[in-house]
Amino acid sequence: MSTLKQIALAGPGLKKQGIVVLQAFLIGLFTFIELTLRSGVGILTGLALLVAFFGGIRFGRPGTTYVAVVTPPLAFAAIAGFWTLILDGFRPSRVGIDFIAALASEAPFLIIGALYGWYVFLNARAKNKPSKARRAE
Image (cartoon, rainbow, N blue to C red; front, side, top):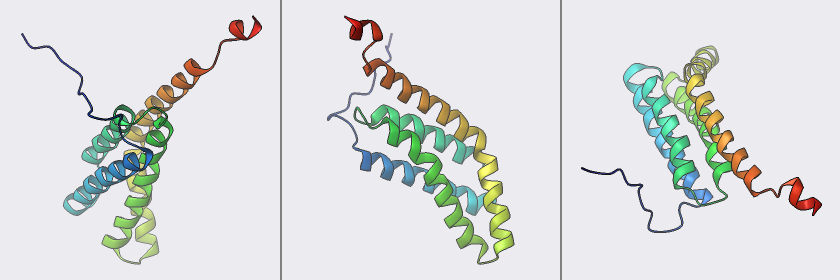
């Protein structure tokens, strides 16, 4: 019978810069694949966004949760805008519509990942804060 073990990291985890680079690379790769194959983003990019959220939180050093939560939406918006501009050309009406459609199609994944990420961040912050009962003593 096998037991599920957590993945052991050799070091303390990823620094803030490592989290940003890996999340941006993962999101960029899947966004590019879906935009070239389907002419739009969909479930693969959404799953890559969720993996980026959870992986950044899981494999980051203590204190890097904020960066792991903030980076995926910003990276996706920048990458979707870049690839839309490259693939559609410099037609403002077409680029604008495709960019808004890309953001709208990934909104549920971004919301789910952000809710989980902010919960983890705020929960860790509340645990590190001393309680009012201890301050009164």
